[in-house]
Structures are given as C-alpha cells and as structure tokens.
Length: 122
Image 1 (cartoon, rainbow, N blue to C red):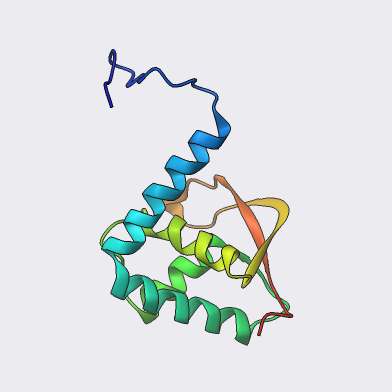
Image 2 (cartoon, one colour):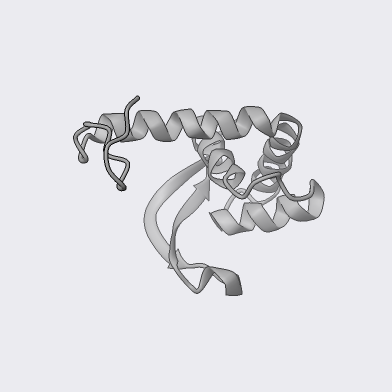
C-alpha cells in the first residue's frame, strides 16, 4: 500500500467507516494473537469477575486492574482494547451507552464507556 505525504494518506477516503472498522479489527486480532497466553488468561479472569458481580457496572479499567493483579500486564497496552472487544463479542458485557470519567491518575479522568455484565450469559 503506497503512502502519500506525511499524514499517511494512502488514497483511501478519510471517512470510510467500514474500512476504519476493518483496520481496527485486524489490529486487535494481531494484538490478541501476539499475546495469546496473556489474552486467554485475561479473558478467563475477566469473565470470572463478571460472573462474581452480575449486577455491577464496569469500566474497561476495572478489567485492567483485575487482570494486572491476577494475570499480570500484557506485552502492549493495546491488548486492553482487544480484551474489551472480546468480552463484548462473546456476550459477557454490554455497553450501556453511558460514559464516566476514568479513575486512574494517568488516564486524566477522560470519559470511557460503561458496561453492564450480561446476567443471562452462560
């Protein structure tokens, strides 16, 4: 793929939503595949957190804190997005449509999605 200019414009429409999603998903798949042992252990730890707290609302950072304590950190912080996507895709959590400020100091209180554990998940 030829890159033109400093902005990385490869001739694609800058506002091609489907292409953006495809590239996002490819990147997350690569991150998952390059962190497979950590990823699988973190999925298990996260699903157990949801099972143990079926009525609770979660932020992505809740899974990050839990997995860092139980599994350890991933090779790259990009793995957190892939983990959240996996939990949504497999029905463990659902976005509520709400956003709240993150609590971690390094996150600077930026807004993040709120998720609800899927109580009916088996």
